[in-house]
Image 1 (cartoon, helix red, strand yellow):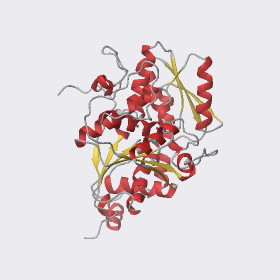
Image 2: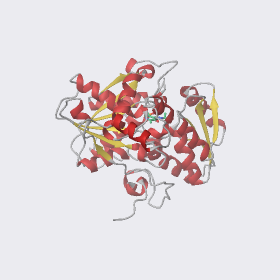
Image 3: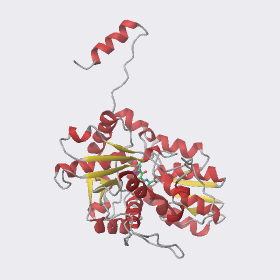
Image 4: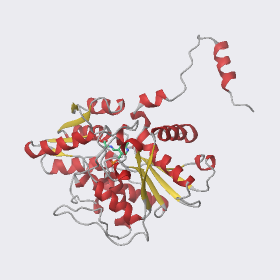
Length: 374
Ligand code: F0G
């Protein structure tokens, strides 16, 4: 088998790159699709749930799929610097790919509201980290203003190449399952990812979609029909940051899932188009529901995702309970980011370590106390 060199090399004929374009890549993509073994029985549902674990990308989130495309194109266009607003993961990914490409990177993040792991990544990769006294939506607005006057290339998902890279997740799911799932559930923040998933599924089904905004000169990659149908898309937002569910922007979004702490998503319209065309819906989960399922995934499946990612499963479990998703279904949940991104939230909700003297007796005491009963 040929050495895997990243998603641009793998899907070159389905992405807006030339045959000789040199990819700026960290071998992103090709993430595992892990079948949940214990959770369906635990909630007493006869369904097949598979987690597409995007936390196993090079910088620990799905953002790397879009970033390899955006930075590859930026370099081709001769950009000296990239810029993004971020709740954390985009900044981590942009910083890493900029380092790889040898260009400068500026990131705007909301002060005090990004997870520690993500901040450490942006700093370690040498990007210029600008903390703003404001939220992600303020940052998004500022980035668009500043890019009008400064020689910086925006790598947020309003950059169409980001969406193009991210659509490859649908290709991988179809390859792994031999076809699309019945449902695909994922978190919705700035709404680029649900749009990208839908474009990927639509292209695979040879179908058009209003979610696709083609900039001048970019081809529509809708090709021959590779699959017969597309899945129903389920988009979940945190209750304190649920503009699409509510149908209006949220001025001061708040949620423990800081990755999706967004009140006015840039790809709102495309996400609504995707959802509508698929026959799907948007729904919300509370912070308590998100954290409960994050822990459940970690402790019953061994999968440690970040809070924002857990909402895909939390929302699905609610919709299964409501009967909106029927038994017998196959559902893929995108787990967008790794749990290590946000150690503070993980530690705060877990059992504390026990501290004992360095003696055999003390250790045995702890073991006896915690050993499962036979
Ligand atoms: N999950 C995680 C872990 C994220 O980091 C994000 C977005 C989403 C879900 C939502 O995806 O925005 O395409 O709807 N994070 C962006 C960032 C906003 O700056 O890292 P979306």
